[in-house]
Length: 520
Image (cartoon, rainbow, N blue to C red):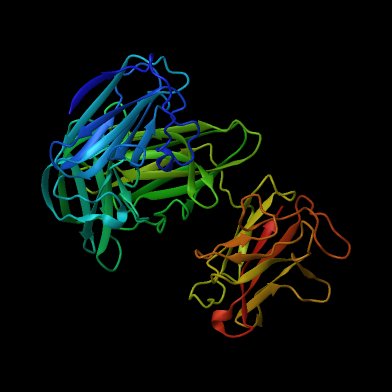
């Protein structure tokens, strides 16, 4: 092990492309002059080979054995300012590795530097993937190490009503931690300090924590972990629950909101709209720094909920946070505001108040009738909601939620409404059927008046005919698909409802959503 200098300025290209199986999707590997080393593992363990210290763009490959028949073990090349680095795990003492190094077509050929480092495998190896995650319980674990291309995964059981806190107590370089293979509540993104998970389910949850190092300039790191499992007493709901996920935020507008509660297992999400040219400002105030709060403002995305981060305030040591953003236009922007507890706070929850200015309620002027609708076969009521949508020629976008997965449906529109409606199959038609009124279906094939879709696994109606700018729901056109083709005018009221099949309730059965009376 150690550091070895190399140069390719006086060499020619070997014509050896044995690294190709390890470089899927990479073109022109080792297209320039290259050099080979034979190296013998001095002990059993995991090893890192890198070109840190080289001048120019380098590439490196490792092979099992020697000669042209040697099988490729790993390949990497210079990218975006990072040197080339690879790792080879599970070697035995005396194993022979052939190394191929070189500069790409833009490289000077010298000076090059090959660095070799290794250490005995830690007791949790081989845990390179979610599938091979090693069980880990509460306790302190020292002397772990991770390298580029050789991630570590730990499976930790978290009882009901408890939280798992994984803290990094020491780090020789730049280890990062994230929840892997899990979509529950907690600290999910890469974080240099550790990871947090709260089990709000009904059974013990096994959460997988991934440890990585992505800094090719220091392609390996030693680290120590302190894993804690502790009860979570802070699960008190406030008046705006249940708003714990990006895709189920509570709709609000400008105003002062008091007596709000948040915990590390119960973040809060709110949604509102910002008009073109307007500036939205959100301020939160709280008491006690033992439970510090973070504030983030996202652009709303139809599926994920929280999209592009517009602004964030994650100051530590203050009892307030503020985010602000100006909509550059030209369309209305729907946003999601996220309030969360700093995951390594000593206290797990806090109360706060929210002051919001420059925001509007995204719901159009209207009212829900026949709400809730009779439950469908999932036990829930199919729900119809509307929001502003500049992509729709009427300005209205409709979403259908909580439907039976796999069933198809479409939207209806009527000139008036009827509450409680007329029983049809397992639901109620809430569009008026009086002689001087009418209703029609948005199922006109080949036109913008076609809303046919199918419910996905989350119960959201996915548009199958290209008439939704978001891919789900329906962008309502300005023209009503009635005989006279009336165009929606400002100030008019129109009533919308969704119909869908519901095979889970019986062969040929169907149901409806609530109806939405919209003033345009």
